[in-house]
Length: 275
Image 1: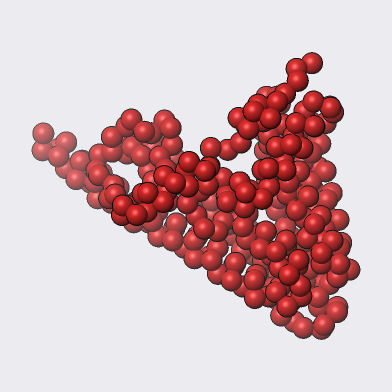
Image 2 (image 1 turned 180 degrees about the vertical axis):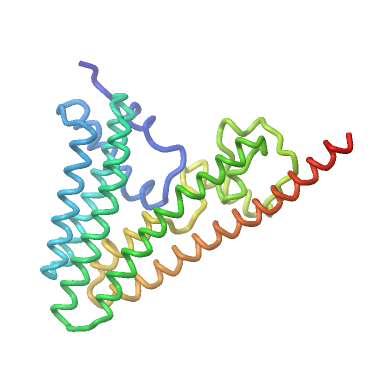
């Protein structure tokens, strides 16, 4: 049986990830992954199920108004959720069903924890604002994870038509397979400061987005509960507004790009006809 090293596990990390994962989760998850890979026979799907069980336990803690315990268990649940992907890539044991299970498990965890947090605070205070909080968190999370695959489909559709590097237009760096291709029309370059910042973040494996679904979950289910009851609604509101602003910005960039793509395609078609 092969013995894996920390360097082996580091090779399984995503090329770019959320800053919360890079700085606050991966340092722990990588070491847990070494232990799991070398000392146990647990599968990635088993880890995903364990993550979901811990997520349900976190929701139960929130429902009983044990905020600190709920935050700690939620962190453990998310950390184990990161370990399952590392084990799958490390041992080559990932499966399409595992991807589905991981995706659905994340959504169930968020809905359970949002419901537990809302229930616990509402029964304690009687304030309807906490019910609204739980519903808003669940809706925002579902919107984020419904929107993302649809945007991916748009990128893939543009690639199929030979339009070259589109990932930069959606706020990220070009994918490796796109770096040497040329678009039919030039994508405007970002300001120099943004490019330098993006390169700096890339060297540290950090995505350029300030807040994504991961940071949103961390703010609502880890940071706010640890800070105390007073922070639940304000922090969730700020994190939710930033997440929504980021999603709107990405949709706007996608819409702007697809308009230019349509104009370029129409111009190219006319030129072909004239030739």
